[in-house]
Length: 324
Image (cartoon, rainbow, N blue to C red; front, side):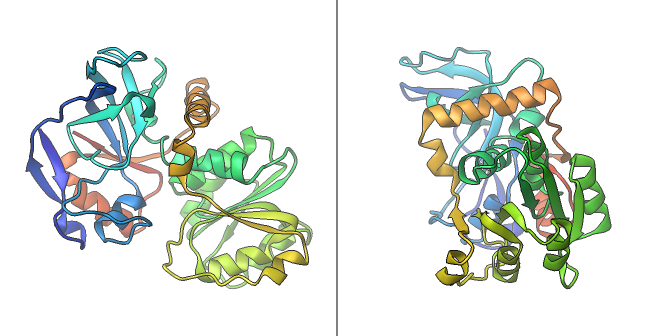
């Protein structure tokens, strides 16, 4: 089968199209013919050797796959050949076939296609659990969503509305992206590249601040996001795209009973019941039309390097998908 692999850390050019053996299934695994692959910033961090956990070489990136089961191991009980499934995995998704443990799978409803399904495992689950599990969003509360035109952000804006947020404030870096955030359901939009954006956020809350904020940049954005928090407010940190550390003085939080909460999706994946329940709910939102996913483009597997360049150039909106 064909797959994408890199043998050294570096830029997009280290991604190589290779021919390798099709994987064999273990007793509790299934073999999936891949129909869609989600592309994520985590794939870029892996390629650059900057991911939150070590990336061994050689390495095949790809954490999101959707496809059709072609073979099942002898102890597999839940799935059969021909079933349409989607999964979040640690690696090796940039390929024509993957072998997956049955506990990592979720069935795709008839009303959801492969491309939309594969846009959910990482960004959808992340947005869901940041808001609901970690952010403990309650009905009527105000939410601040950074990078609201991106994969996690666009879903988070919609889920915040579904979960009953009273006000959703979205930030983005351009007029086009701000307009897209509005289309997704944001009540107010703010350009975070403009000086004093945090003051604008506070004005939009009549000085009270936001109850839940989603933050994945770090550095100056993190520090200014803290200034946007209401008493008892929660910042959920799920990345550090700037590469800058974010020193935190506990006294700043103590004075207003505020919280900074870390989020790492693999910990959710270890809880099978929680992982499956949120997957089912998210897929149901798509099937019912309550959640609309923005697909920024579909590309052939061999175009993986070009897709990484597009993503790093921050010129895209929505989910980028590879198709074998």
